[in-house]
Structure formats: structure tokens, C-alpha cells
Amino acid sequence: MISFRDVSKVSTVIVTMSDYQTTIASAVEGQTATTAELNRSIAEAATGSEQIAESIGAVAAAARSTSESVDDSRQAAADLAEVSSRLEGLVGRFRFCPRSRPRREDATARRGPGMKLRRLGGVRA
Image (cartoon, rainbow, N blue to C red; front, side, top):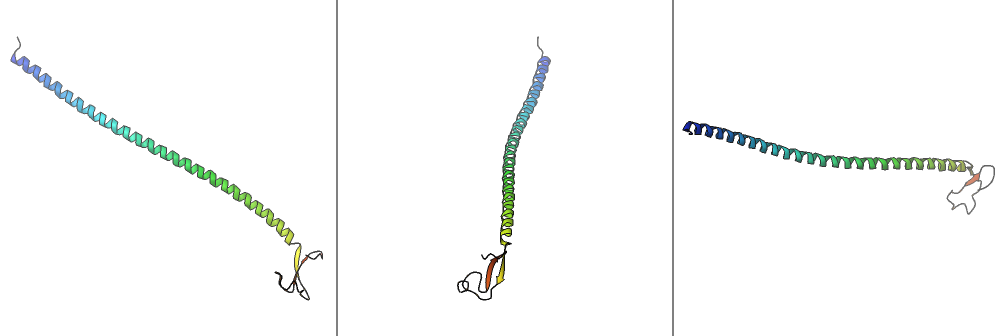
């Protein structure tokens, strides 16, 4: 026969098991919340990483464009130096010489009266 004492022991065991189950359920709930927070943080980090990668791509594209512009500028400077050298050679063959009498058609010319543009070597320009 089951005594009151036996029923009391079984009841105590049941209450203890219920407390354990409540503790376990609370721990599982805490782990679930922590896991959800970790998932949210990982998703935010992934989004941030994507944005950083896009920014790095944009910076790389800007660097390539700048490099190309520098190369174009360098080529333009070389071309300008060549044209300048050729122009200097052409202009160096000429000199200004004063004239004794200004001609009528020269009086209104850009060179001004009394000045004549002559090519070195005696050939008139």
C-alpha cells in the first residue's frame, strides 16, 4: 500500500522536476534570444561588409580613372613640349629690324609703324 509519506516523496520529486524543467526552459529561451541577436548582428556585419566592398570598388575605379587622366595629361604635356620646341625653332629664324621709312600698308599692320619682320638670312617675310 502507498503511504502518505510515499506520496509526499513523489510529490517532492515532481516539484523538483518541474523546477528543473522551468530552469531548462528559461535557459533555452535565453539561448534562443542570444542566437537571434547573433543572427541579427551577423546580418548587419554582412551588410556593412558589402557596403565596404562597394566603396573599395568605387575608390579603385576612381584611382584607375585618375591614373588614366594623369597618363593623358603627361602625353598632352609631351605633345605641347614638342609643339613648343618646333615653334621656338620656327620663331628663332625671324628677328625684328627697324625700318628707315614705314610703308603706307605697314602703318596699319599689327607690327606697328617702323618695325619690319625679317627672316634671318635676308629673306623678307
